[in-house]
Image 1 (cartoon, helix red, strand yellow):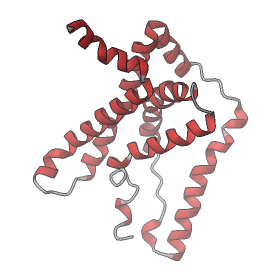
Image 2 (image 1 turned 135 degrees about the vertical axis):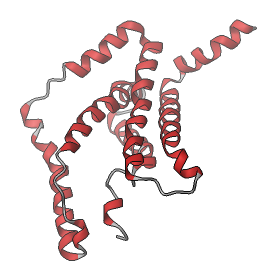
Image 3 (image 1 turned 120 degrees about the vertical axis):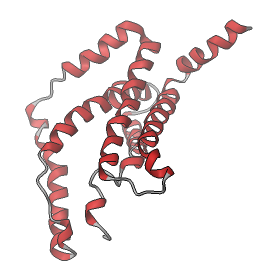
Image 4 (image 1 turned 180 degrees about the vertical axis):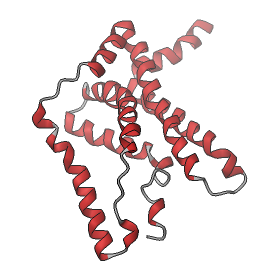
Length: 190
């Protein structure tokens, strides 16, 4: 009986790896973010900007650790080697880098329009250090989201549906830090 109980978690992880991924990712990330914010929340204080900034690296542990752990559980050492080799061997044709400029250009155009027609609080700033945060964050996130979850989800669903579902979960995952990384705070009442 005790061996049956011990195999239940492993059996669940093997039979429902995508569900396990989302449960682990959200639990690790959101509990981590809550732990960083809790001292201020318990004192009914607004969260300082630094606390909001610290929440995000803690949240990155969720997708990266979940992706690594579940890859190890479902595919062993071979799966881990494959996962990490994909991170290092991404060969993307140069023509695909140009579309990467479209989102920042759209954000810049929107901010300039909001600044012109609504308020100067929308004046774009040049935060080059953001690249130093964004690149490692993206790599850590993608170990789980596109290194583990997307391939597992694609085994059972078409790539478009998988992309949409994964994008919705990814958006939901960001909720605890949406207002604390410069997305809303600098714009005050707007």
